[in-house]
Image (tube, rainbow, N blue to C red; front, side):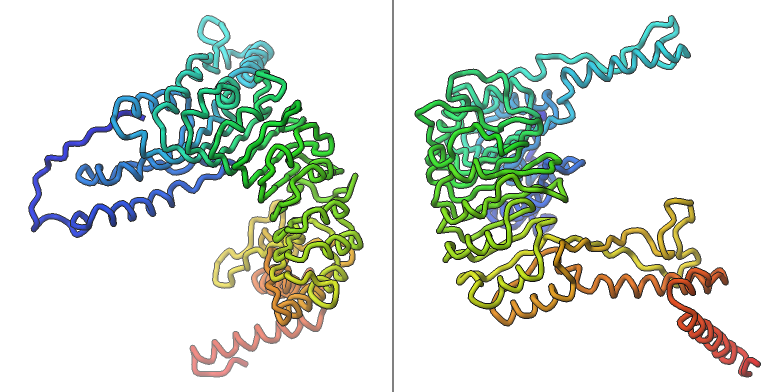
Length: 526
C-alpha cells in the first residue's frame, strides 16, 4: 500500500457539481461506510480474498479516507511494511484503522512447504531427465523463489501497530510465527493497542516459539485491558492454551471466547473460570475429523455465570461420546442459549439438565445431532418443555434440492458420461436427508406446527427437509417422462413409475400433439 496524494484543485462550479458532492460530509461518510462495509465481508475460510477497493474520486478522497482505511486487509508481508510506511508518513491515516486483517496463508509456505515443493520439483527433473525442470545447460531450475526472512520482520508489525491507536479488531490468519510471538509475548504490544476488544488467531500451532514464562501467553492476553472477545483456531493436534501455573492471569474484560482445536478431552489449559471469570459466551469446536469427543474437562472448569454455550463437531458425522456433557450443564443455571452436537448428550440426560435451566430461551442442535421424534415432542409440549424456551434451531438434518430439467431446452439433460450419469435422468444436486435413528419427516412437520401454536419459533436447515421427498418424486417423474418423450426410450420410466403412469403420459402427449396439429391446419388429426 503506497502513499496516495490527490490534487484537490480541480475547478468546479455549482452548475457542474454533481448532487453527491453537494451532500454534507457526515452523509457522505455514512454512504462510504455502507459501501466499503459490503466489500469487506471477510471470511477466513473463503478461498477468495475480500474484494479490493479504491478511491472513487479525487475530490471525495478527503471524505473517503476514513472509510477506505477503516478495515485493512494485508495478504503479503511486503504490504505490511508498505502500510507501516504509509501510516508513519501520512499524518492521521493510522487513526482511521479500526480493523486490521493479516491473512498471510498464501505466504505461510515460508519453510517446510516451499522446501518440500522445491525438492519435489528437483526429484521430478532428475527422474524424468527430459529437461522439463532444467535450463539449456541441464541445470535444475529453482521453480520456487527463496524466502527472504526480512519480509516477515516483527519490527515491521511493531512499527505498524505503533501508529494504529484506534485499532479495535485484529484478525491473524496463518501469520508467521515470529510475528505471532510478537503479539503474544512482547509486553509493549498491549500498551499500543489500548482499544483492542476483539482478537482472532488462526494458526497451525499457536506460537510454539513463545516460552516467556510458566504462564505462557495467557499473561500477555491479560494485558489487553479492553479485550472482550477472543477467537483462537489451532489446526494441528494439541491444546490451544498452554499449561498455566498459579496464579492464573485474569482476563477481566473477556465476555466471548471461541476455541477451535483437536482434543478437548486432553485439556491442560487453565481453568476458564479463573482465566475469564466474567465470561458470557463460550464456543467450543472440535476442528478435526474424529470419532470421539469429550468437552467435559473444559466445561467443568468454566464459569458458572455463562449465558451462552455452543459446542460443535463440524467435520464429523458419526460421533461417539467419551463423556456426555448433559451431566455438567446444570452448573449453568443462567443459560439462555445452548447449542449441542453429536456425542454430547443423551435423551434422558438432556431433559434432566433442562430442568435446571429456567432461563433457557434458545436451544440449537448442530448438524448430525441425534435428535429423535420423541425428543422433539417432549421439547415443545408437556411438562418437559423448558419454561422460557421460545426458539428451537434444528440443523441436525441436511438436504439439497437440485435444479429441475428444462422442458423448453433443446438439451435438457446433462451429458451421459458413464459413472457420473445422474440417477433417474435428473440433474445433479439432489441430496436426500439422512434422518437420525428415530427421526422422520412426518413427525418433524407435526412438531413444527405444534411448536408454533405453543409460541415456540422453529428454524434451521432441517426444515428444508420437509417436503423434500415429494419434490424429489415429482422431479424424478418429470425427468424420466421427458427423457422418454425426447428419446422414445421409456424403459427406465416404466421400471420406476409403472406402466399405467407411462401409458397415460404417452396418451397425453399424443393428444396434445393432435390438438396442436388441429390448431395449425384447421383439420383434426386422424
